Length: 112
Image (cartoon, rainbow, N blue to C red; front, side, top):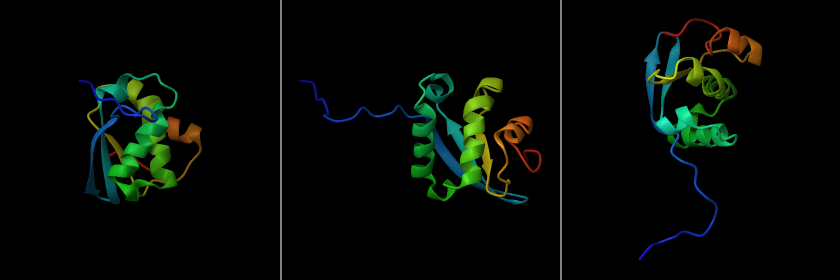
C-alpha cells in the first residue's frame, strides 16, 4: 500500500545543515548545501533554499545574510561547485549586486 499526501509539493532538501561559528569580526553561518542545491536549475529553488536556512537558523534572516546567500547560490555554486560550505557573515555590509559579485560574495573584507 502506498501513502500519498495531498497538498503542495515539498521542495527537495537544499540545505544539509548549518552551523554558527565565531570569526574575528562577529559570527559566521556555515551553510552546507546538498547535491540537489548544487545541481538544480529550478527557478524557485533559491527562495526555497533560503527558507530552509532561515528555518534552521532564524537569526540569519537579515538583508546582508540573504544577499550573501543569493550571491553564493547564483555564482559561488557554479564557480566553486565543490566548496564544502557557503559562509555568511553577520558583519558584512549591504552592497549592490555588482559589488557583491565583484567581491566574490565577500563585501567588506576577505573570507576568513
